Amino acid sequence: MTTLAENETPATDSELLELVALAKSGNRHAFGQLVERFERTIYAIALRKLNNHAEAQELAQEVFVQAMQKLPQLRDPACFPGWLRSIAVRMSINRCLRRGPVFAAESHSLEASCVNTDTPLRQAVAKETRQQVRAGLKRLGDMDRQTLEAFYVEGRSLLEMSDDFESPVGTIKRRLHVARKRLAKHLAELAPA
Image 1 (cartoon, helix red, strand yellow):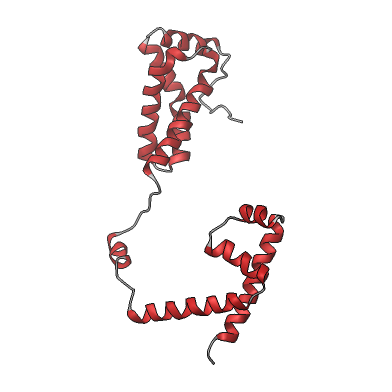
Image 2 (cartoon, one colour; image 1 turned 90 degrees about the horizontal axis):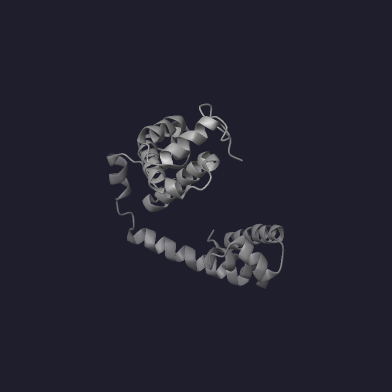
């Protein structure tokens, strides 16, 4: 449930209804008062979603531009606060989806991460490890092997596995735990002394 911010008054406030009606008729001063009244709330919504001060400020401005353009479509002036917040939430989510994940890094850490660590020795060790894991999987029972392969090789989720194996998610988790322990035991036996 969305609560009113400190600077908002209830939507039944006759002043708010009058401001919305005036703004709908094209009164820019009335819309400016609505912006002043709700700017902190819209900024807070944007900041919570975007986690970036500058982007939240920019998005808050875009929300008010969008609201000004769409205001004639608002049927009930009493719904303005919720309507405005829903625009802010929708636009914040859209911005997050468009920008993708943001990672901050310093130049020296980026340079360090670009080093090619794929050496012939690492390739040989990785190949041997893969062979040992395959050999260990072959030594497991059908249920353990199928559970591990579904999760780690096929990338299936616990819910998908629950449906496939016709078992509750808790059972799938337990099977994964037990199968990993058994595989680790087999790998320890296969390791050279």
